[in-house]
Length: 112
Ligand code: 5GP
Ligand code: ZN
Image (tube, rainbow, N blue to C red; front, top):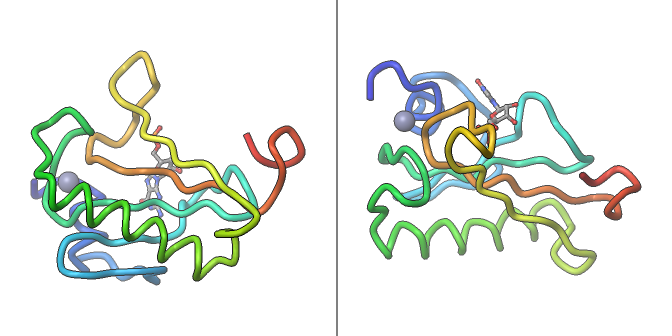
């Protein structure tokens, strides 16, 4: 998708500091963080959301990337949230599959 911002970020068309990256996925900081740690995990291929026929190996790579992000950000033991806003009722604004990894605070005390 030539006009998709997350396609461009994940495939290095827009320079970004990656928190984690492999052949299938990229992880980078959200530009408008909602918690002390707020990282987005996205596939390098374009899928609109989690119900857009995402291959199992891509979903597995995203789950593995969440683990790597949690380790890199030091929130793996303290805990964190993983959220996939999907479609209009959920308020999905970027229509390229992404998982929000949110942590670094307790729920209600800096973590939404
Ligand atoms: P959602 O679609 O799940 O509501 O959220 C999209 C998220 O992407 C938001 O948290 C927003 O801050 C983030 N976002 C939108 N555009 C960009 C961008 O160009 N760069 C980065 N790093 N984050 C973005
Ligand atoms: Zn895309």
